[in-house]
Image (cartoon, rainbow, N blue to C red):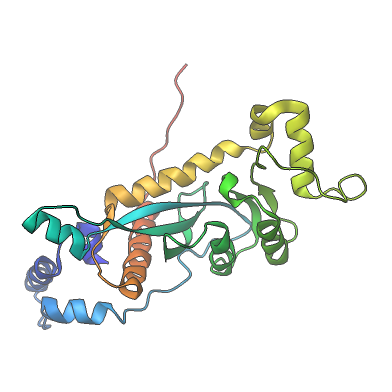
Length: 251
């Protein structure tokens, strides 16, 4: 976590820790950078990133993190075309506090909707609402959320080709009610009614991660990359717990 917070390689982290030990007058040995790198593969990070109290509003989104692979190293050294590799970081964010409630790192082959369940499993608090973009629209997502917390409001914009369910007349689902409201008020009216604008705060959390931690992963294997991303989310939560800026609109 210290390495990610300061954006330093393992060797420089080793020197920084040694300096801290000397300043604190603590006689403790500091492992070398090779040991740090080797042990990071087995590092466990607590799955529960935040212990929120009471029902929470959740914004789910994903972003890409670059992996500096061997293909790009060959490109820098010998020229030619390098191959870019990416990972997807899925986050569940509390828009009211900016805290990251849950995180998952996957390959680009995993769809966004398939990560809703694993993200919600990491949140111990009751869920008041879930907001996400249209990529998460689907019956499976609504079903997963209903099994997790039946009273949770699901604010996901239906696709333009979406049609009401067979039970829309007698027992409309949340998705059916969204379609009806969009038909009556338009999409902008629906967004205002369900406070869909809070989804932008999830994008802010993504930018906060990329600004403070970085836009690429340092680890080379997927298991260690998952550990690195989870530790990065922990660092973000520690920083946000110290205080967040308060913005006010001027007349």
